Each structure stands twice: as structure tokens, then as C-alpha cells.
Amino acid sequence: MRLGSDNTGPALPQVMDALTRANDGHAAPYGTDALTDAARDKVREVFAAPDAAVEFVATGTAANVLALATLTQPWQTIFCTPRAHILVDECHAPEFYTGGARLTLTGHEDKMTADDLTAAIAALPRRDVHASEPGTVALTQVTEMGQLYTLDELRSITDVAHAHGLPVHLDGARFANACAALGCTPAQMSHEAGIDAVSFGASKNGCLNVEAVVMFDPGHAWELERRRKRGGHLVSKGRFLAAQMLGYLEDDVWLTSARRANANAARLVAGLRALPGCTFLAEPQANMIFARLPRATHQRLHAGGAIYGLYEGPLEDGDPDEPLLMRCVCDWSLTNDQIDDFLALANG
Image (cartoon, rainbow, N blue to C red; front, side, top):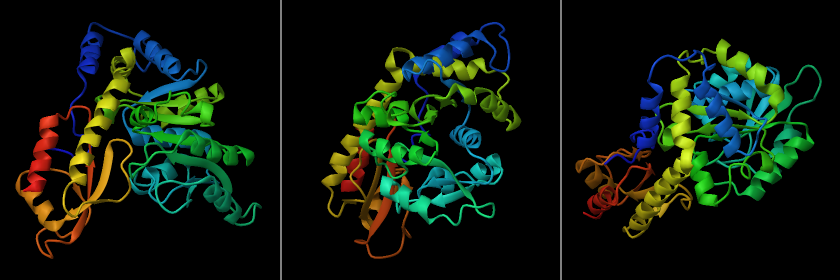
């Protein structure tokens, strides 16, 4: 039972079928093939953004940093939360790719507010040549702690950013899960809410290794292409990235997969809630769960072979009733039986 990450699950059959179809004969390299053109157009259709610049990369970090580097000058600051993936999980790649843009903490947890952003901008040092200048605002949806920004919350933040002339980037590693949970369209959760660029994740939700950088101002297209090449992320056989994205987006497979992952998480949450001593760090809103369970419960789970994130410890020694923090992430492929087996282990 692997509930540690949605990166551990298999690829969707529709994605594998699309790859098999693409693996026939020869095609132009470096994203100049017909499949890549079709995949770009499909992303534009899904986002209702016919003029958007769209490029494909193999990792979420690549998508984030190429978008940020295109939006941000080296002497500027990037506003992000203390939990932001770009701050704690990307090995200073944003600083490297932007040429040194500074990451400025905004807010206190995994969500910032419009007031947080206003205060962070006001708190920057003097605005002459000696100081960093305000730059891009970076948000994550679903957040790193499994929470959601409402559409109104997104708009309130982007309004502040745009009032100061700042662009907004959205790390959408779990973009599909957020759309499914909020019941909104990609357009409503992106450019219609004032977002300027999105890292549209697909790997966590059933692809092998493809993410899309979507920039709603087509004026960024050439620089984004240049940065992708210069940064080492232009894949020679680009049709295999494009094929994954096409298989993912056709017939709303991406949304069906996300709904299934969210439903799996809801089933797990309901079972965890019934366990003695279980408390949630925050109410789960998509497919990621942070909860505290007694040490004795964790010991049973580990002894039974359950795999998930244990963020506090030690596991072996200590008060059996002491609550320890765990993270579970549900992907599309989990079955009800697997979730119920996990809960049965936890129950003892």
C-alpha cells in the first residue's frame, strides 16, 4: 500500500496508448512535429486561451523555473509562501535559472493572502538601485499542504500584484485536482482569475513525465523557447512528451483521473476520522492529507507494510499515544480495497 506520493502510481492507459501510437515511424525532432503542434493547440483549447505560449518539459521543477525566469529579472524578488515548493524542494533552481532573483517569504504557512502580499511589498527596502525590486508573485494550487485557493482568493491576490505591475505564476503540479475539487474550468482558475503563467502538471495525475508551461501573454513565447533550450530542457524526441499530453487531455481523461484521486482521498479521510486519536493538520480539500495519529497506530501501519510520509518521530521509541504527523497522497489508481486495507491496519 503506497500512499506516500501521487508520483508512485502507474501511468493512465490512455497515456500509454497515445505513446504507442506515437512510436510509429519517424517525426521531426525538438518539438517541430505535428503531434507537438496538436498538443499545444489542445492545451490552448482546454485553457480557452487560443494565443497562449505553450511548451512541454519533463519535470515540474523545469516548468516552474522556466516560467519564473521568463517573468522575473535577476535583480527582482519572487514572493512565495514559506512552504512553497520553489523554496524548499527545488534545490535553489529558481535562483539559478533566474540569475539570482531573491525568494521573499510572504504569509505564514502554505497560503498567502492579498493582505500578506501587500505587506510583503511594502516591507521591501528602499526602491533605488541598491535594493531588490518587486518581481513575480508565485502561488501553488493545490498548495503544498493540500489546501485550495478559492477563485475569489486568487483574484484578490492577482489584483494586488497587478496593481503593483507584478506578474503571477501558478505552480499547478496538482492543477487537475484543484479544478476537480472546486468544480471550475482551467480558464476560471488561471487567466480569468488574473494568473499570468501556469505550470500545468500532468505527471502526478497519470502521465509518465510531462508538464506544460502555459504563458497567457504570447509575447513571452520566444524567450520561453530560448530559456528551455539554454536550460537543457528541450527534448529531442519531443513527440513523446506531446503524445502523453494528448492522451491525458482527450475526452477529459485528466479531469476524470483527478476526480478519482480526490474521491480516493475522501474515502481515506472518512476512515481516518473514525480512528481514535486522529486529528487533521487542516481539513483535506483535494488528494493530499496531513494528519496526526498515535505512535502505536503508525507502528501497526509500518509493520503491515504501509508506505506513506511520516514527518515526526522516532517511530520505534516513545509514548505509544504520542501523535505523529503523517502525509498521505492518493492517486487515481488506488482501489477501495487498498484504502480499506490501510484503514484496517490502522484500526488494528
